[in-house]
Length: 244
Image (cartoon, rainbow, N blue to C red; front, side, top):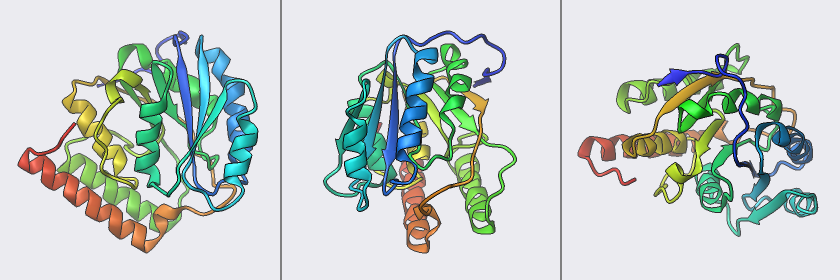
């Protein structure tokens, strides 16, 4: 594993899919997509923005269709809510370019930071963005520490931040068998990519306050279901039955 975002000049990728998972993100989706379109030509010779509408119940589906009228933008709609894991699975399957980055539709990651991930791409198959100086509420800080403990101590993933934006080499993650549906999916993908021989790098990136909507990951039922998914992941890893 290396950390290389600040040490290498930016070399354009041959192609990049910027996937934007969105569930009830009508307040932020359009500026996120437009910022992705503004950044993409500087980091990739060819690019697309792929909106993944996870069966949203607000105006997100209609807004996504409208944005799909812009050059380089297309949309996939889920007929039922599949969670962040299902959105990742769709992104990996649908990506048309050799690299893919998942940019949340909630606006908490600035697309202007994508070049920080791209700089490390030549040395890695997966570049993990990590957040610093986070000003989260107490509940999220506790959740983050617990997830970090599970990832490092139980799952053997020695990364600063397993749950933030990542740049992937598409061929490495295409066809992964993804079972998690919540934020535990990041640990699952990293474990299975590691089993496929992935090289990793890390890059410090930004983390912005949420400007609209609410974070589903903080709700107690979601927290409990995520804990169950992570326990199941650890159990399969321990038993040697984790399928890539």
